[in-house]
Image (cartoon, one colour):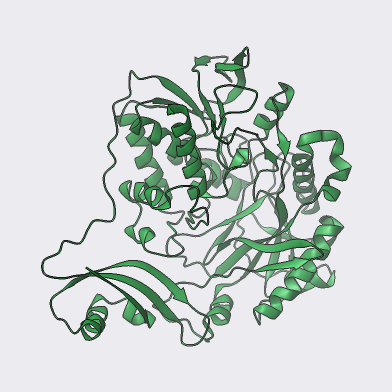
Length: 515
């Protein structure tokens, strides 16, 4: 076997026949098989090229498969562990538990993916938020309906390829093992999530939907189980708390019980949407994108007045989604289908939140960040003219108008289905956030010529980039320092930042229990 690095035009990368011809010339050989093992786009100059890492096999060598089938055990009668939350951390924790011989009992406050779709339709069309079933709560967590981007820098935390292989094993496209920035797509993720659920059930795990944790049973600083909303007691000596960054009631529960939690850095801002064709032309240096190139993305960061202003969760060919978890608040996020073929590109653009921003909320102690976050979501709700229990209209502003501190007279078309309303986001956001966003957008316009335009619209607020609260745990045992058997896990506990890192953290918590 020989490994070859190539930089080729997009049309060559898309054709096995053309690649074979090129490899034949490169290797001076006719008889061989090959497999692309890494693929990335180089758009730094014109023409845009595709970087390929290819393994070439000679003389009957067998091409290895991308994945191996995981060996799971039947755990129907095994020692139980309770996993609270069925997002990426909870799902991968449950699979790892079965692999290592423990019985996962998963409690998920939301619904299965099929039932959950009706509640998402209600948010978008009727502007009604179900606090237990929405874009954040339900089978697969926020990840199921939040794009399925799998790129992570957390390679030191665990085996990223093993996580990707598990997804492929459950129906994800094999391309995620190859692409530098792998992505599944919101339209495909529900089937992957369903397949993972079926594996857990097949091998004796339990999954209880619409089952909300309301209390922890603790005796002499050792967890003994949980209590659900139906007053049911479920007993186990080990509990993985993988409830996600939006389960605010869990943070309040821990605080009320005197279980230590900490305020944690996070970021907040807006979601900005451009025509996808504009982003393509900027990034690919052309008027019309090649059919062999995917819709272009971008990643931008700028230091402004000693704080980071950065793009977050960029969705090419995507849609801005209403991600509130309770009536009376506006929260935005973004997602893309697998083909990324919608006419808009959206991204969160956010600013780091510092202690000075939380000063008005210091009476909330460790929950000051959460109170600050919630206050802005409620302010956005009111600014768009929503009233009462119903309403998901979002405040919006043309990009250049926002930078100039001017309320927009009208707004461009936008992918946000409930609808947008012109509002002075430069006044709605705290002054420290607004000033930095304004300067950050201006600097982004220098980096990407054409980015700063009134054809772009910003929609508020992008407030759930990560949890504003951290639940402490021991670095070795992964247990809460004060409560034996309680394993804070994933994004909600402050130990992950996306699907892959959350999945790895779920696996590590199970490893810690076994060890």
